[in-house]
Picture 1 (cartoon, rainbow, N blue to C red):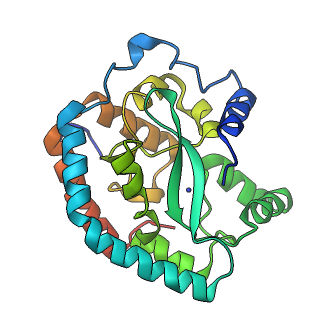
Picture 2 (cartoon, helix red, strand yellow; picture 1 turned 45 degrees about the vertical axis):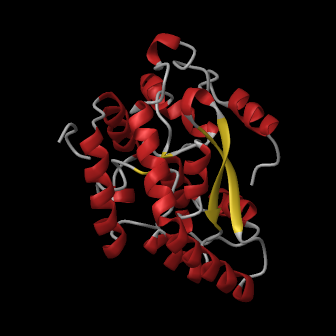
Length: 244
């Protein structure tokens, strides 16, 4: 094993605006050092060809799951079926990342109110950018998350070339500041539908450990590492361990 332990924006300008609010303009920090970013995404054409072949092979079955889930969402929960949010990808490119909606419609205001009124939740959010007991997540959304069905629409991102089947966890612009000198490694690869941190107890690891594992994955990439992560992802999805 080459490494030791293996979530709606309106327009693209909103991404640039958010980048400008990050201390030290971290969206360009390190990434401006072109020597730290490879000229072609990590894994090259072999990794890209593997992504396309596997995605096209599983797409018919996945579409049935997505359409069935979308019907249930439409019948049981008012609001959009898809959740769309800008993420940062290879060479700092912003792209729309797709997910099945797992939260209440007014999720941003719900989170804001919670963080303003609950110091413990605010500290947890600031530490990991996640909440174990998240009031925004619907009951059906909890099932979608534990089964990882909510992430299946990201196969469209894979086909479009925004993402890879395996890679670093896709981040929003405000997270870039937390990557520090590892940001160049992040921008050297397409973000992944799954990755090293997802198969390492998933969300039960610290944010800093996630960053370190993603950076190590990029620097030590091997084809068989991707194969192993995909196989381990199947097991992680089945037991739902650490996903919230």
